[in-house]
Amino acid sequence: MFPQNRPPAPLQPPPGSSASVVAAAAAAAAAASGTPQSLKLTYPETLDRIKEEFQFLQTQYHSLKLECEKLATEKTEIQRHYVMYYEMSYGLNIEMHKQTEIAKRLNVICAQLIPFLSQEHQQQVVQAMERAKQVTMGELNASIGVRGLPPLPHSQQLQAQHLSQHAQGLPVGPHPSGLPHPGLALGGGSGLLALSGALGAQLAAKDERAHLEAAAAAAAAADAYSFHVSADGQMQPVPFPPDALLGPGIPRHARQIHTLNHGEVVCAVTISTSTRHVYTGGKGCVKVWDISQPGSKSPMAQLDCLNRDNYIRSCKLLSDGRTLIVGGEASTLSIWDLATPTPRIKAELTSSAPACYALAISPDNKVCFSCCSDGNIVVWDLHNQTLVRQFQGHTDGASCIDISNDGTKLWTGGLDNTVRCWDLREGRQLQQHDFTSQIFSLGYCPTGEWLAVGMESSNVEVLHVSKPDKYQLHLHESCVLSLKFAYCGKWFVSTGKDNLLNAWRTPYGSSIFQSKESSSVLSCDISPDDQFIVTGSGDKKATVYEVIY
Image 1 (cartoon, one colour):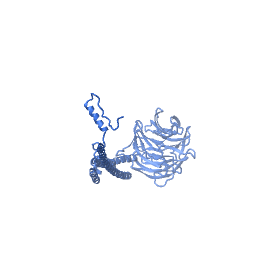
Image 2 (cartoon, helix red, strand yellow; image 1 turned 90 degrees about the vertical axis):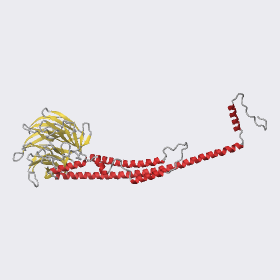
Image 3 (cartoon, one colour; image 1 turned 45 degrees about the horizontal axis):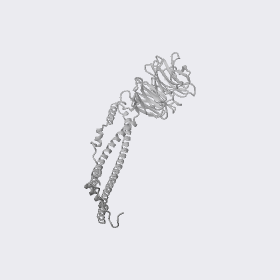
Image 4 (cartoon, one colour; image 1 turned 30 degrees about the vertical axis):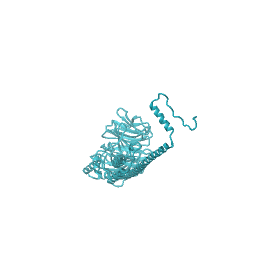
């Protein structure tokens, strides 16, 4: 292309080119035709520059490695603190539950001892116990020494200071861009650790208070057995008033004074107005007992009723004590004349139902109501001994009954899960209350508009008959078989398959006393003067209790 041994001629700029273009072209030509001498100057500079960059990166790597080790150390320390706080929290939780259990047992002991005090001292002790339960947050803080934010423990302060000083002495290289490393100024990291230690102590104290409050609430909820049920179905534990177990007419406890060995399962009991005689109904007969004298008991009379193998389910005395009405697993009610030297049947009332589950007598003693196994409520005229009317509504057996003191309303419960109210003047149903369980027993308060209902589900519910208010009581562990109000109306008793006799305060259900028998308690009655309780049980006996005020 070119003549041999002749270098190429330099490029000539075209005519009219500017000086700058000419200079650029000359520089390009010089670079293209560089000599070995110019290469010796360029390569060392490049290597030096690479070496400097490598040393810079190595320094940065060393700094970051130290930072990583520092953060790993902090992480280990924080994990150790976490384990320490967890162990502390667990220990406090165990201690809290221990103290809660101790408090529960002490409350039970106090409740058992209070009835043995005089009325004046009882009131003082109950008020003192109620005051002791009202612990404010200020008092709680004062008792545990909390004043605002808790200080960091001394050992943790020293540890945080040591970590802070150690972190501040670490070298940190500049960022390659010339900016400091964001977040790697380790003095701030140790400050964060110290802050986390302080916050950890604060949160531990806060968690402890929260655990105490939650445990107290949980213990109160666990101990609660009486709940108020609002119209929308919300249940709240009932805070009992200070005088719940005090005042005239409120018993302290009941003392067993007689055991009446009937010989068969006692499904029905009643006590006379004079409180001298008790009537126990078992299989095929009613036995009459005189409890006016102490000592061992044997029946003073036996009234053979129904068929020999049929159980008596209910027996009711007229207020004069001269007439006893007996019903049970037969279509016939027996009316006994007790005024004669030897009791005798003076009439029998026959219905179409195969069994009678419960009886009630009107306040004027003129009418008898029988709950039948077919669900009907039969109204009998006792003077003329005739069937007057039937209330029809229950779709299964009518199991229990009570009548208002003025004799105008009748309450019945059934195996169809309903309680119904009947107007005796107009002969029609007034109300119906639906439940999720079969109704085994009920009682109407003699002095107020409260109805207590015992259920197969073990609940006792106390309903206001004209408002949506009601209380639900949970001390029975099995079905509630019988229920009876005291004549003063301030308390009532219930018995159950769980062998328990429970006495409750009307209407909110504060537990007055509890007695456990050896077998299911099938029936109960209270004397008209509220001085005696009689129960009939599955172990073939009746028990007479004296009510202690």
